[in-house]
Image (cartoon, rainbow, N blue to C red; front, top):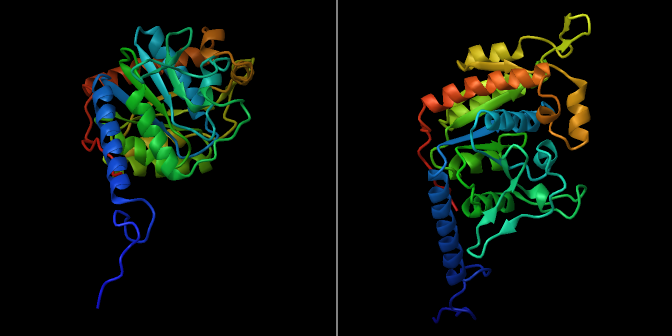
Length: 309
């Protein structure tokens, strides 16, 4: 009995892409991952800012830490991995930038703010601030890999990755794609809900065998005009997480209405109010952060550095 013949001998079983197309796609993925490894090797310290909980001010913390590091003379890059809510252009005072430049060799040139902080964000490529990014997980994984592969961070010593809430596609892709990821930096606020969810993020990092470098508590307290302190969202969450997971508490950021005002205006708070209590706390956080990160020598227990296509 003769076996039925496929109309396209090169097609994969069940139709769809041919074996040749699949092989070409795999080859492209491998080449992009090779470029990621090559570019990331040039950056000593690569830290992903993780929360798992939305609304804790993670992007504000990432942007302010980047600028605090820059004031210390560090060359800093920020990769905005929050494709559905890319707020880093606004936080870093780059919301007026439309598009990213590309060189003849295909490399991407980051936008640079007044502190010299380099930024790559999907938010810089959208036609308007209101335009949504409607992507499934596979598209986000591909976008992360390609942006990391083709961006020239121009001598950056630190790369901060601003992650979206959760412990899913973007977080896994960053952990598995970046070789020698220095570690995760946790951000929480004092509420009980935030504490529970951020503990999930800490457990996520442990399961991936990626070091936890420290925790920052945002919106920790409000200092009244008379000098008294009010704990509006509760107290003790960061201390509890730090103790349970044996990580340092790097600092507690006070509530300051001017943070919201500056952010809404597209002006970096750190630039607008350098003498504020919050700005001074960030400078102290940056000092501790540098001591912890540089004592590790840019190395990580996460040696995987390659992603399953």
